[in-house]
Image 1 (spheres, rainbow, N blue to C red):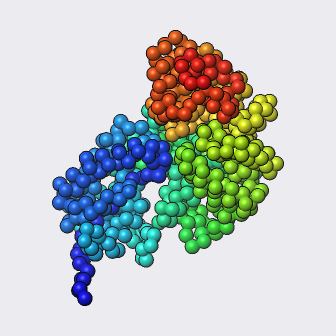
Image 2: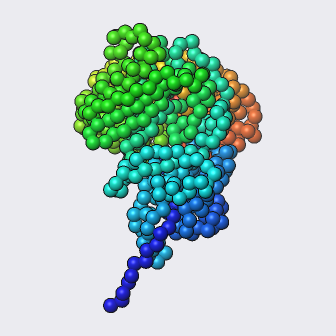
Image 3: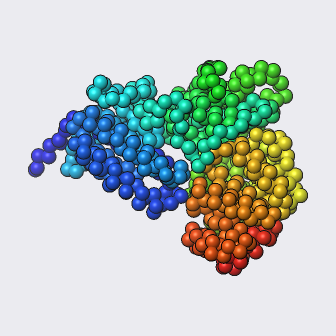
Length: 592
């Protein structure tokens, strides 16, 4: 019998992974794999060798490395993150590969070419709570680098790490934190010009920090913030930035004055959420984005069963500071109809997290989660509208295996949503949008879209839906006005290319082809693989007689959507009033 002794040694362990890897692969699986391999082989691996480390293995979305010195490990991590930031400078936000890095020093088990043990597990868990582009280290590691690394780590306090028995103190490095006040933060989209302040109190709610110690609870923290944004937006005398623009700052070290400048708001709300042991705690602080002064801060705690009451408390507290004179009717309006089943609400939050990914896989997962939520709470109107929108998008985006089934489900669900709740602006907006593509009752859809923006003039979703409804109904001027309002509600939205392209389509129907080209190019700078933007350019160039550019745009369209045909697009719905658009596509030589 062979005596197989386990080899142990003390080492510094570095674990790295790619933030949002599933979203990136959903957008471009092969391209993401190639770019990650280039970053590992061209940047991370050489830096590890230079700092006397050893790459133990490449994982699917990152790597594991071992160092004899934690000082070497931390210096290496800083160089890797700086190198990644430089390489990402010219890459669109939606395609950026950003590492999260965790470092711990501890005992490891060595088995042939791999390492195991608590030391490795802790490094991996620290990586999980690091910010994209940031570094998180254990207290043991921090003690050893103190005075030896010329950069300051920020104390995160005690953290509950998944599958680690005892809470651990952790420290983080935000790579942008050393920038001088007022230095430009990394722009999520191409434009960084200051926006004029609206003529009423204006506010943006930044993503709250998830303090639960479990990265899988991120959806809950994000959902709480979204509910607060929705409630605030019901106050018609406020101007509230939409969720998607606020969330472009997630995981970044931000200068509040710069956030205010970029979003065109006076106030910024930030905070944290902790969900543990059947309770939810929210801390929040309201900051004047012009002066940087803290106006208000407070902490709220409730039982998990009172989560909606907690959201309302935070909303009313914030609004009370901005506008002391509150009316009970407005507070009542700001409190949306709540789902009766908390598990259904939990599934809804998870569904929305998938919905915002805008990928085929994300759409499928949203539908699955939304239907499960609806089974648990059949009177949850907004989740019925969400499920109906997903079935519609399945058809319009060409993902449907059985388009006829998805059409019927979309119509059934939109009718169900309206029968449950015909007074919620988000529900009405989703129903109007779904109906515009699937039904085509323009008079009814316009009425619903108008009602949605009247109920909530701060809703990006309502204004964007109204733009599509009016465009599909053959009213391009009104569509452009709606898209412009939507863009102001969410000026750095990662999905802004959709509203900009919708404007481009409407401009074509008004024979404003030069402006449509500007819109199409702007949309493609934000998302080069967005096929509708290529359609916009192909049609606009064709109408201007710029044949070579029209053919090039048509070729690019077929590269990103090889099965595209004009008749297939018409069959998916919503193109009956896009006569000049369809004519332009035919002139550009696209297949019928």
